[in-house]
Length: 162
Ligand code: PNS
Image (cartoon, rainbow, N blue to C red):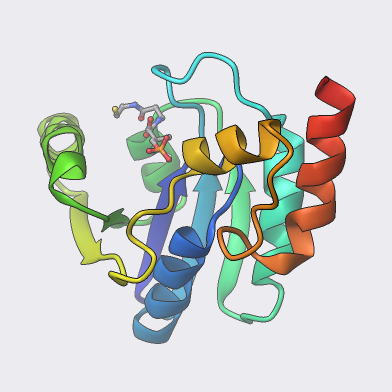
């Protein structure tokens, strides 16, 4: 079985992420979306459980997409689950440096695991979770940035945080 992991912090999941999930689900037998911690992003807006629940809600329409969470290294998650391919979306050139570094670092510690990059749909490439968090925190609607199903959750989270 052709199984891949699509990792990220998903704080929160965006339509850009959804594009990569949908396209990966069309290519591979099974896609495991794995929510991990990004050491560079200190204080997530959503807890790990909230991010996982949002993802589960928005991927339930795909019968070959699963959502997991992991608190260790991505390559260890992949190994534990017999996954040899990591999928990452590339939005623009500014993603490239850090993505290449991460892929090469992961390859160094686990040469049997490959990272494949998928170019984001250009209509969605400006979207980032951090932009979503910023607009939402100033009370702006993030419709068109994230799946409609999670809009109420984002709005209530931001209200409760004020
Ligand atoms: O959505 P993000 O924040 O760009 O995803 C980055 C993520 C979570 C995939 C990355 O930080 C990660 O793999 N974290 C788990 C810890 C790990 O394996 N670190 C080594 C690679 S940098």
